Image (tube, rainbow, N blue to C red; front, side):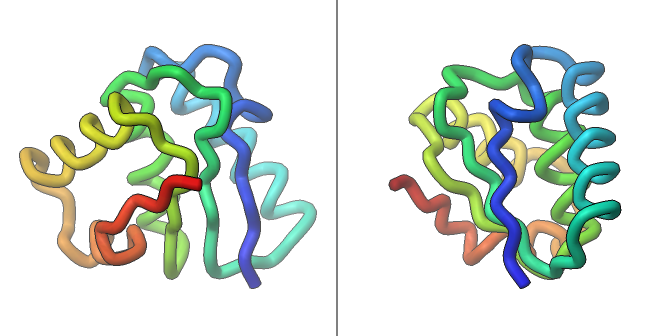
Length: 107
């Protein structure tokens, strides 16, 4: 089963690790109580910018827990930060592999 997560519904501020941790906890609490899913679509619609810390605290942590993550509606700034993090961090390649084909879908 696939679930869509709209970041704007879980975080109004996306520029700190603390905001990312809060969004991650809200996402986990809601989805563990309301649905069982293996795949997530993380939608960045209406999000202008995120910090690299926010990405690490949300996207990468969720990628560690779900079979597949698809990222949707990324603007160029968010896409650049995610792609840069993938290149420069020591994240387990298996986790990165869960982010759908490294192809960041924009709708």
